[in-house]
Image (tube, helix red, strand yellow):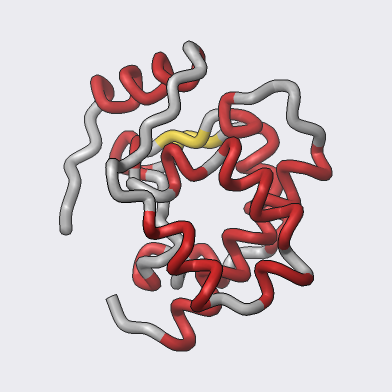
Length: 137
């Protein structure tokens, strides 16, 4: 599935985030499927997953503003070759990428600590790696 990201899409997404609006699909079974398929979640990454669900899934579960979706391996192959410190930096400080993609600093939540942001990144990296190794797009 291809989504064209425009400046308008980014502005709408950022506006929704700033207003505290959570954009979720009607059928929220993706969370449950992930927990069943990805066994590390409950043990090692449980707290990281909570941060992700509360702050990151709005964009990263649906591709808003070009956010890479962890369950789509092709969107993560190149990112997983980058140093983890670069992914942390982009998540903490914010990042404008190619094709009008945008990662707001701290996912748009300035109250998140560096540790919480890096934990969410660790969760996404682990999830993306899992899907890259076990699934096809």
